[in-house]
Image (tube, rainbow, N blue to C red; front, side, top):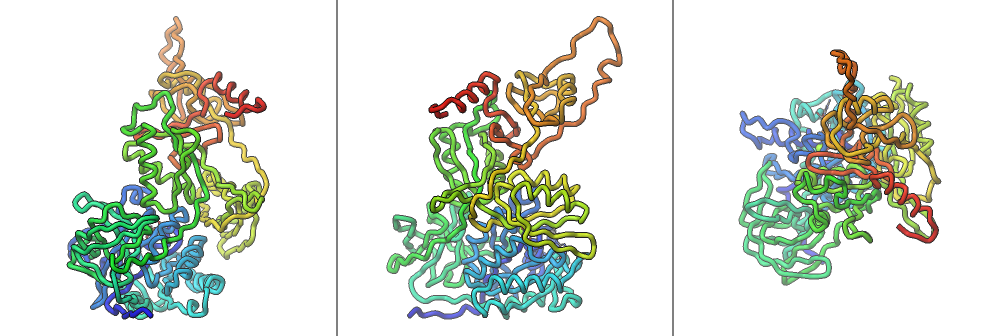
Length: 613
Ligand SMILES: Nc1nc2c(ncn2[C@@H]2O[C@H](COP(=O)(O)OP(=O)(O)OP(=O)(O)O)[C@@H](O)[C@H]2O)c(=O)[nH]1
Ligand SMILES: [Mg+2]
């Protein structure tokens, strides 16, 4: 029997929800109301979204810890991302918590990721507090949202105890909460009280030190820090610990024990079971390793993470511009960087391929991979990536593919176009519901393959008003082929610098992606034409000088501004015979085979029997 006691002075709470339901905003308010900052300190909003990409995209990508005090109780808070592609982050950190706040937008109700995170929370055995947020929204229907949350509980709960969950209503943006939707306190006091009453105090096992590493952080002064919640015993600066990694056990020494205080980390002499700590001095420790007292080196189960569903190749840049714009561009540098990512990015897989300069990288979705690409280019890497594809498997002799549950919210007038597009992509409608204000919610089961490259089209079909969210639900038998043919590419017929005259001619065939004055190479994709089939255009062509001078001849050339594709749009755009060249300065779409000669050779090889590329 293990001896335990309860840490009544601590609550460990994760905040989970679908994307944008207000988690990080709620953390802002919790921090502010616990007097973490000086009264006149301007800390802004989305305080926990500290990394550049999070700020730019307005979404949380990495799960993060903070800690506040309420009366005598320390509340450790874990903010998590709501986007399905970062689901691995949620799975990774839930083991640090004893309970969670399940946020649900009062207007949107539960969305696909609400189901995913709630299921994970139940699996880990967390106590749940339901927070119906954004009750101030014009179309908020807190009662309806709560009813749907109850349905979700009935569907997902693993035992009857889990069905009992207190409900708090909130306007995170104003820092207010209450036990009734129409009667909120001027502050979050009702939420603080609910957390302290209903989230269980951590159970502290007595005995030798033991902690599962749930996260890592790095800082120039202290080096790598191992983050986790101590499950047994205690640890102090200077202690020797055993690091139980996969396949080996080594000894290391804890240099410092730190805890979170608001946004800071402060060194403490020691900490014990129930506390969430950062330990320095252990260097190579990986997420999932157990740290333990060398006298009782008992491993904890490693964190289990859902498998990736989407993959693409990352290769050394083979464009004629290779090595010009990046600081790191060799095979060795690319390989080392990709494998290093595995230490922190649990949902990711990396494999070598037959070609030494190309790697297969798999993740939980296009955005998961896009964030890695963007992070690497900002660090100075240059490389090329292929079109994202769903990971198809053969299971018991049957071809299986990943399938997602998709929820879309659209206006009724777009219903026909959206259902047609989803039908073509092998989507199967499982539910449709109309609201009183002309909105429709559709629920679909659809192969992941059908969703790759769909987002751009969806926004066009719904004139930018549609909302969609999806979540992987596992593997199903192959749903059959479908061909979503993209219009053909306009490709540069020769290398040089693009000119107004040449681009104007190209614009007669379609939309262009570049402005005058940009360096191009043969085979680079410079636009999209109006029908299928690629065409070569000479965007570097100059206007022939004529003998007759005309002061108006140049004015007649008027270019439409380039349609610049973002990284995600570029990934959506890519066809199988194309690559995206990524450098710190540019994103360039290109054909895999740049010249006509290469293209026809590749075609011949592909068609020739018995010859493999
Ligand atoms: N009207 C209203 N808007 C809110 C409320 N709480 C948050 N928002 C807004 O909702 C948007 C998303 O808020 P976030 O806090 O970033 O949401 P999140 O759940 O952290 O999102 P991810 O981390 O990306 O999953 C922001 O524009 C907030 O200002 C609220 O109570 N009422
Ligand atoms: Mg957030």
